[in-house]
Amino acid sequence: MSTRNVKEHLADHLAIRDLLDRYTNGVNQRDWAAVEAVFTADATWEVGGNDIPAMNQSFSSAPAIAAGISSLVNPMSVLVQSNHAAVIEVNGNTATAVSTINEFGLPPGADNAMTLWGTYYDDIVRDRDGEWRFKRRKFRLSWLDMTGPKGQVIAKTP
Image (cartoon, rainbow, N blue to C red; front, side, top):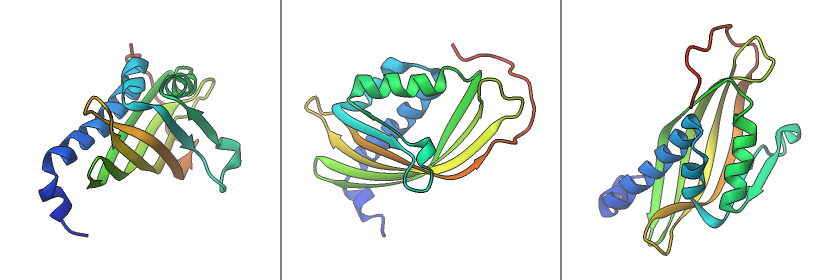
């Protein structure tokens, strides 16, 4: 690994980092139109994997992804996601990204908050309009704690 790809494609790296942030902000703000806009029309979004089949979810197409994620997030009284440590590799009009995700939320009916950590593995493309979008997002969970602290929701997300 080196910084050569960053130096050679700095504007693309910044645009892709912005893409990652716009996704997280869309989820945090429950702005499902913004979430839909960061995916290609034929994109896929997956969570789970062989280690946790009960949590497997998969949605295909930008509208279905936004609707699917909203169905998971909207029932929660609070959810805050953070993305970290993005490693991006640009190759022409395609790119890959790996980033660490942390979420804190209060599932419906729960007294204790949940905390999770995991990794997104992304395939990203420069779409016809020149914007970078997710072609495929695959999330793999590393840590889940459903016995988090009790607290009080101060402000609900709009």
